[in-house]
Amino acid sequence: MSIDAPVKVTPPARKITTKPRVSDQIFRGIVTTFSFSALLILSLIAIFLLIKGFTTFKEQGIGFITNFEWTVVIDENGIETANFGLQAMLLGTLVISIIALIAAVPLSVLTALFLTFYAPERIKKILVTIIDLMAAFPSILYGLWGFFVLMPMAEYWAKLIHKWLGWIYIFDVPDPIYTRSPFIAGLVLSIMIIPIITSVSREVFSQTPLDRIQAAYALGATKWGMIRAVVLPFGAGGVVGGSMLGLGRAFGETVAVFSVLNIVFRTNFQILFTQGGNVASMIIQKWGEAAPSEVGALMAAGLVLFILTLLVNFLANYVVTKTVKSGR
Image (cartoon, rainbow, N blue to C red; front, side, top):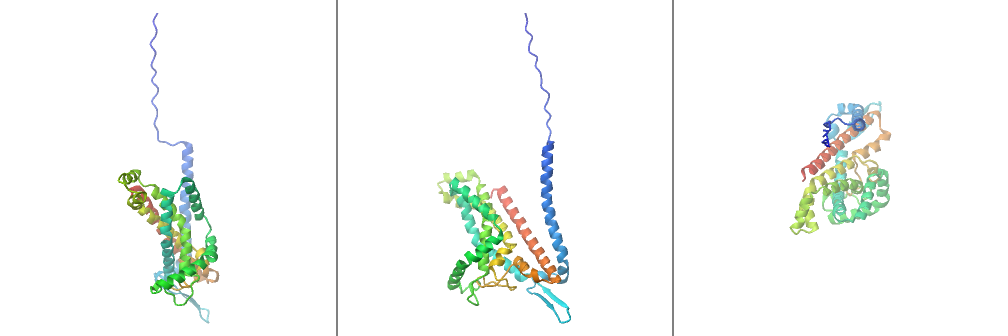
């Protein structure tokens, strides 16, 4: 009696296709729509500001950026003469933002290093949550905290700085008035941008190649030596990018600066003295009593600030992305 040999059945060839499933196509369409909607909203904002401020750009020309005067004069016949120049407030924006960066960057970098390499896991989770929560606080809370809590302490610090470094022009004051100064506004902004710089720096530090870290330890480096030799050089570009993102946030801040700074349309490099301003706070100060022509000028100022902030953020994202991808 013979037993038939088993018949070998060859399974059909599997069809390999790159066509996504219907659910994937729907999800991709939704994500793409929302992505382009954000770009559309930004474009509409820019177009709106350009339309409203076009007359100012046409009349003032490049002087709108370079002039230091902002005046509206109506004579006895009702004829209005306007001269709009944004240079003083642009310089004020830059001064306050630089103060914020000087105060925020060292603290942010040290915090990011602690969270990445030193903090126990339980403490790390709590601190990361607190830092992320700080980024979501409304600006008015920072302004109120700066006015009622920080300002009295900052006045004392300003007096000490003037006492020991008053021979330097930027730390000199024409009158002994230290309240509501660019120095205090910069400190408030530094608290606001610390979460941004810390988060970006921590993300970049965590991307440091493990083989480089292990090689530093193998050569006998301490943890701090490894950080100086490996982590900081690798993450320098990320820190710069995070600082620029913070700079973009500082450029456009309004309420917090308005709460702790005496807004005066004048260039002031004496950071301890009680006068100054930035573009955003100038807009909110003048908006309520602005004539129609001045409203257009304020819209034009908003467009300048919009473009400046957008350029800084784009450059910061480019620096951070390039740093992570290149590994240095």
